[in-house]
Image 1 (cartoon, rainbow, N blue to C red):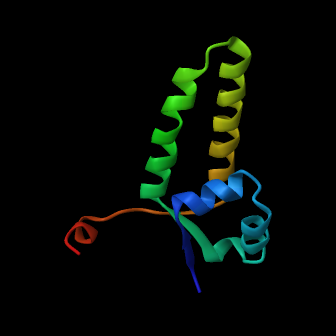
Image 2 (cartoon, rainbow, N blue to C red):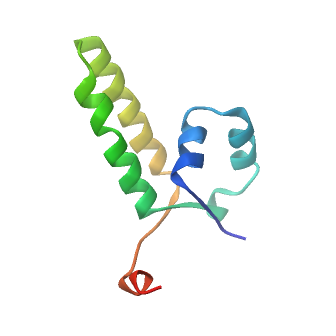
Length: 88
């Protein structure tokens, strides 16, 4: 069975939420994925913390977390969005 994680669950996974983390690692990587819509939501969510960072160390910390998130995405099946999906 294939599971598509939503943005909130994936964010909890990235934050190390123990319950979500245990559930995710209990599945094969091939059985888990993220939609491109979740990727868009994650991407747009980075705008505020990046632009609100007031000090160089805070800016660097936010960019480090963004870099780590992008690195994690290479481990996931990414599911695109097609035109027929718009008509459902």
